[in-house]
Image (cartoon, rainbow, N blue to C red; front, top):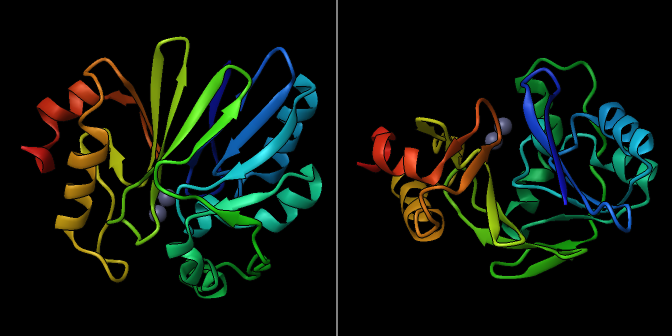
Length: 211
Ligand SMILES: [Zn+2]
Ligand SMILES: [Zn+2]
């Protein structure tokens, strides 16, 4: 399996493409603010997106998913608890001062805690981690004994996501990290939704919110 992570959009959201070399099938995580970049990478590598996954419904992660879906033909999934937040895209665009809000579309399905999606020999497990938003999820990507965590805006290197954006608390986000992410081994790479990569061990030992 190949993993490419690159920042997209004005808020530099870390978008990740997971690709199975053998079949050319790919999963795009948080590509909604990087339609051009994502489609260019898919084309260049001859990958076919089979799923568009989202860690949560903030505009920098899901934004123009309607257009990304049209370009790739892949279904777009989001945790159901974040669908109401997704429907506030015009409001979120206003907060960022964007002249034009991306179009809200009907999504194709739910991301449920514990579900496992296959990509060739790799598996992507859904971990519901409410706190940053009610429907925030992380993805545990396992391949050949190696697991990496895509943590969205739940866990950052040395920090955690905001919890003051509606309906959640700092306890929620810390509880989610302790219950769903810290059980992974220290060496597990963590790819946050913004900023540098880290590991579970680094965050267990150094993250001020987890001490
Ligand atoms: Zn966010
Ligand atoms: Zn974000």
